[in-house]
Length: 371
Image (cartoon, rainbow, N blue to C red; front, side, top):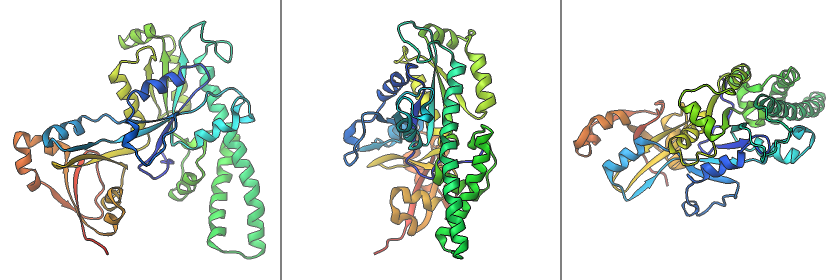
């Protein structure tokens, strides 16, 4: 599957769904896990954004062993996006504002209502999870098609001018590359196919990351059940909505995870952790650790990152001055047992600039200084 999210360690998940499906309640539930604002003194965090701790028992174990003065864990940003209505791509409801908010995130939690409650009126008049899934999918595709077809038309005219003037500048070549990708997207969206589920070359993926189409974003489906239905589902009893939802997701979003939950079970910590971790994993993120008596810190990086680029997450100069990385897997550290603090520094392996950082690595970076 192509990786079309931005290459960054600061990625965001957006919560989307129809109105009155429990979307904001889900956000509020996850917000209880949020990091206090004082931990981000130079950032303004909007009321509809939560920065939540990514639970990790490995980090907790390292803190128990090192007993550091400071503990810094990995986080995930979650955005509550206003409820979608049928016709949003044409401007209904919050329309373009809603879809612009989706474009600004990297992955989606799609909240789907699968509970009956007369007091909570559905915007479509009836409760139908499959219809809601289809509406969201069609609205995202429609908005992408509007954007792509307009951009194809604009670029076609500009490229003709470039060719007439024999313009071979970097800007002109870049536009031609993006134009080819947009043409391919245009054909896919005409057929109502998601951009994410097509084969793309490495160069095409670079262009798609710049465009940030809605149908290129990965999704997790959060199925909001009643408390009674969720308790029954957790007990492995049949739920009438589960099979049709799973069939729809398998057909339309085959690599996506489904999480069944209930906003009425807000104290279920294990479930909240599962939702947060699923979002973190969806974005292709991993963690490595730096350890010591002063600080134990969990650092977020993209999968398949090389050691010098991982070092740059700590400080930009570390990539330029990279010498080597002293690496130990968390599993190896844990096997050292009670005398880990006495011997762990002798157990590191030295790795060079081509080393690919693995999830759970404990790393000490050796760098040379620059004036």
